[in-house]
Length: 392
Ligand SMILES: Cc1ncc(COP(=O)(O)O)c(C=O)c1O
Image (tube, rainbow, N blue to C red):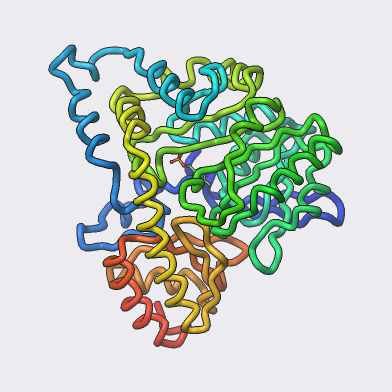
């Protein structure tokens, strides 16, 4: 499956409104893939800014909870555990919803796949922007279901009228906000209008709002769509502990939605949230949300400072970055990304994979620590000083 998911996907669009959808590959956690030995070989000095992670990792309370979960009070990893219920309880409290509104996933990847499985069909396509995070499109394609792509505008934002028009009759709309890889964000007011329009013109279409990078947004017109999702069976919100909470390796994500929607997801993926979750990750998730609010606030502030520095560095060299509201940027480096990536890797800096159809110009770069970015830009400077053809 991993190999077939790597194939680029081209699916015919809906009339004149859409173009072909091109998807590269799915997960950010390809660092674990058996097909990526070079990434596995990265040494401690390598600056890894390829996968939109929090370079600080989890907070101390999370690390302590993981250690404590090893026992000795019962040897928890040796037991099937009821801890999934505790994490769902904690999440319900955090978001002010009922436990029946939440389902857990082994990373939000599992949520994205389950939602695609339940809400797309041969005659109910998936609609998403081009480019976007590929998980749903890859999975729909794997199921043999149609994928419709809607190009972003020149500022790498979705053209919402075009997006809504293309979504008529769709089974599922993947609405990633902030979006990966473009890093841009649609304000809450415009998202609300988009959802209302779609609900009225295509009432059977479900909208998956992926809020993976929610905590990093600094635009004031920003709010979660969780309250709407619990009321509206046609809206689902996906969240993850992989980004701001620094727990990508622990694999904890969840969906919040109307009780009927969550029931459908749970029925499809029987036992989701219990049998797919490991005990250490569950304890880590509980500890993560019990941290003081200052954890998220501090991480957002840290990322914002690094983001400002990095965007300014490229803009100052006439390389235009999209307006990032996330913990990564999408920047026009004016040359094929493959050669740039390989030249940077040879100097110990890992930037992201290609994102067709922008692989000839735009590179996605995650934000490391300030120290890492200050060192990374020196490498970028050296690599970009050479003509594009010689860069590799
Ligand atoms: C937009 C978006 N959604 C979902 C995911 C999946 O994350 P995870 O499975 O680690 O929760 C990612 C990973 O980078 C992402 O960028």
